[in-house]
Image (cartoon, rainbow, N blue to C red; front, side, top):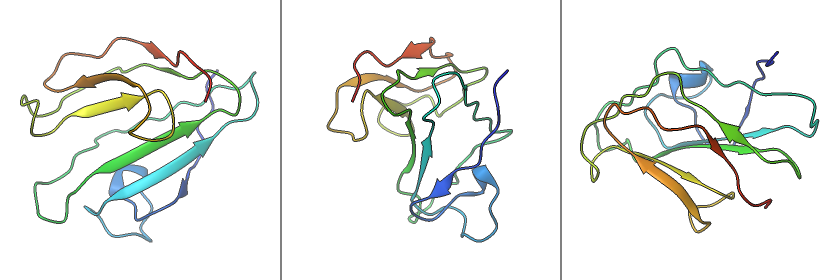
Length: 119
């Protein structure tokens, strides 16, 4: 059974993780760690949306599982249908210079992804 965990903010938060200490619509980054290979982490957003504005640069959600592989699955997905506007990218590592696992936009649900190499 997945367990819901809270994350530690590295930069300012959007309302996605509902922490009122941080302003909305500002570049944010969250680090989620899991060192127990027998434990699953499920991250859920009832509504994760960003308004188009000059302060909306980019949001990052980083998940690190120690020396374990990570599996990501989506139940619902909706991003602007424009590959150069809004999109989601998943990388196999902690930075955008790591190997890209995919880039998605529109409403097509991404397939279940599992990290291929350990960081």
